[in-house]
Structures are given as C-alpha cells and as structure tokens.
Image (cartoon, rainbow, N blue to C red; front, top):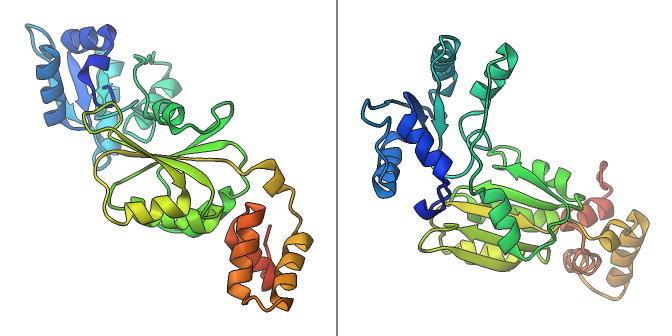
Length: 273
C-alpha cells in the first residue's frame, strides 16, 4: 500500500484489491481502513479471504499461502507502508515462489527509500539501502559502514531513533550530514536536516511516526586521510597542551572521519581503518 497518502495509490492496486480472492495483509485492520478511504470493496461482490501476514507468523503463513498458489489461487500481499519484501513481510513468499517457478509480479507504488532520498537533499547519484539497523551489535555494524561513500538510507522505529542517531554520530562523525524523514506523504510529514550530532540531540526529545534516515557517504577527502596523518595530528595537538579526548574529536571533525577510527589509532587498537 502507499506510504501514507491514499491518493498515491495506483489504479492497478485498487483493481487488484477489488478482484482479489486472497489478501495477505501485514495489518488487516489498517487494510480495511485503507480500503474504506479509497472506496474499494475488498474482493468485490464475492468478497476476499483476508489473512494476517506479519513478522510473527510469516514463516508459518508462507507455507499456507504457497499451497494456495500451487492450487492456482492468486494471492495479493500488502503491507502497511511501502513495498512488501523490502524490510516488510513478503520476501519469504516471493523467494519460495521463485524456487517453484510460480509467477511473481509487483504493483509499483510510492517507496519510502526513494522518497526519503529525494527530499533529503543529499547526493542521489549513488546510494544503498541498509534497512533496519540491528538491535545487537549496532556500534560494530555502523563501524563497518563508516567508509561507505554512497548515500545510505535506513529505516528505524520511533522509540529507537535517538539511540541510533547517537550511535551514527559516534561511528560516522557528529558533523556527517543526514536527514530524518518522518511520516512521509502523511499529514504531519517532517524532514529534519543537519549533522548527525545535531539530529541525535533533536531526537532525544522524542520522535513519532514512521521514520527513514538518510546519511551522507564518506567524502573522498576524508577517505584519503591516512592513519599516520590522523595519529600525527592528534599527537601535535597534545604537544600544544590539548587534552587527548578533545584532540581526537577535533581531528575527527576536521578530517571528516569517525571519532572511533581516530581513537583506535591513537590507542593502538587493532583493526582501525
């Protein structure tokens, strides 16, 4: 289904919902609300069998839906916002259908990934989609992405966004440009742009709604900074009387590299890049 605005729903989607015999929905209540707003009768005069299809039951329900498909019954998969299968239920069923040679098609519509990318104001010529950051090992996961030169697009839940932005500021640098896009295409759409440190401070006050985060990739000049140059810059500041912690932060900001990288270099931690 569309990200939020029912007026963005393509006619082909509305027709598919009216003609469907089986609809697998991430949230059946929201599907029915959407259908009411769009003036669509699910399944038309005959009605459709609507079943829930979400994270907790996706594995079990996939087998059931696959059996329907084997017997020649079409299945329409819809999610609350965005494209099924992209950080939403649907991937397992599509993969199973591909394995068995069952035809799979998609109805194009609004995408939170490309919508957030365009409104972010960050480079769009090359980008990568990182989905939801992991709940465990967030710092190490982000550290692996610190050298990524493409613009990165993430999804995040409102109750985790402040902590994630703070971790991004630590991994990528507080001044790395980013945009937090919430409630895209909805009534209270908001786009906040700034450095990751600034955005983390803003999010600490609380954020509501569906959230997408767009982060600038590492700039070429930053990637070119050598380990030796970074360590030497910190040492030079320390000789001038600057405290090590402050020196590390200043060098990281000026070079446009993650503070963690400079910290690891100065303290001789292996694996620093």
